[in-house]
Length: 478
Ligand code: MTE
Ligand code: MO
Image (cartoon, rainbow, N blue to C red):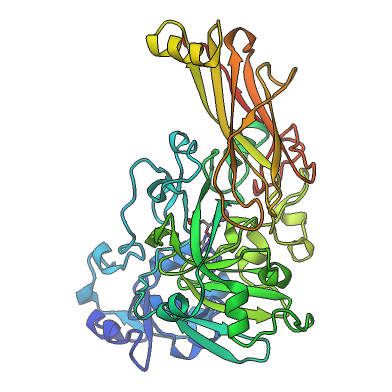
């Protein structure tokens, strides 16, 4: 047997980001990956792991768990960790860096699906406000929250001819007129659990109705920035620039068609504020793309780079995750390449509260009187939203599981922006005697798009774009 070459952990640590040779460990094996970094399909994010253990990152990016990826790594093997640095033949837990150590703390009211990465939805008790407070704005992180410093952060803009221009946050704030827009962000997977429960299981985070929130965003208009960077926004060569890529500091990336980016009424901004305050770390501090009307997946957080290109972004988030297929299709028999990436969101609505107004309490009696009602009632509340700036024009509500309908009142609000980028809140007060076994809501937008009745008919294995009629069983508490 050949003698082993042992390497001390202190030595590995010296081969970090700033060293000429960059090493990582996986299990007890040490690799010098310097010559491979430029070829890493995931880009420079791998530098996050050099000088230490790559194991936890490897777990997050499950794409690595394939033999050919292990084989690539093996080519760079240089030795094993010295047994002096191991406990029971393994690296002790505290020596394996946790990519999530510097994640911020979160409001306990958020309904957490996973902690690392943080995926948490807005509780239904907070879905009734037109403006979602930032602390309870849903969080959808694929990876860790990168540590980005506003003082040193630079946004790089790359044009089709390869020219690049850099902007600091100070540049963005001082050289461009701030633009504010009120916009809803909705995750492509919002209401996935409803599909899993009512049709059959769909893979992914089991979001209920709270992977959606609404707030005011302020930043620089993307058109202004592109123009400043030298791109002719009113007269561009469509063959060279068809897509705008947004690349985040932790590796996440996506793109949008250029027509949306340069649309003077498209209201795409690079936001540095939400809810009137500096962007919070979970939501992209210090800078995020904000693409109103599109799936939130394109509103890239911790924005580091913008690229104008002929092709769309090649990330898995553009090429695989956010696409929809037929009810019968499986991941094995679909062609991901020919299916378009989801951009604008379809019409959506959800019931967020059923409140009983009963004459058994003084408060209930006062409310019934205010409403001019002589019998007990149920107040149904919820949201309705459509993508692409399409306005919600009608909300239909049924108290008897879809046999008869009435129209809910759409509540007035104050939204900024050229189109209808925000959800509408609605409410409906229905006499209790009319309540059947379930309340149902469906909405219509100004293109007269409707929601489908059944989850079965719109089933897709990833559980994306779930917008079947939302049914909530009614249970009489009294
Ligand atoms: N941007 C980065 N850099 N990393 C991410 O994981 N997730 C995307 C998008 N932008 C993501 C990102 C997805 S899928 C959604 S739904 C929204 O961010 C969520 O935004 P929020 O966490 O501010 O609600
Ligand atoms: Mo998402």
